[in-house]
Length: 75
Image (cartoon, rainbow, N blue to C red; front, side, top):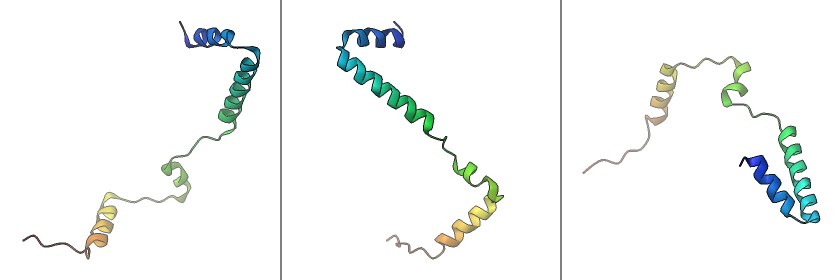
């Protein structure tokens, strides 16, 4: 049995007021999914900035950030 057939079977078993409630919910879901713009990735959000960061620059920034980080001495 497909999902559509299963839903129709369940729908037919409901009283009229619950069928209307289910229809209202289906319309809500339809409106909710059609009105949301697709989400952009971080890369997509920053695409117009034309920033090109190399792996070496990232490594250098990490070294600078962690250079003065307090470390516990092992006994």
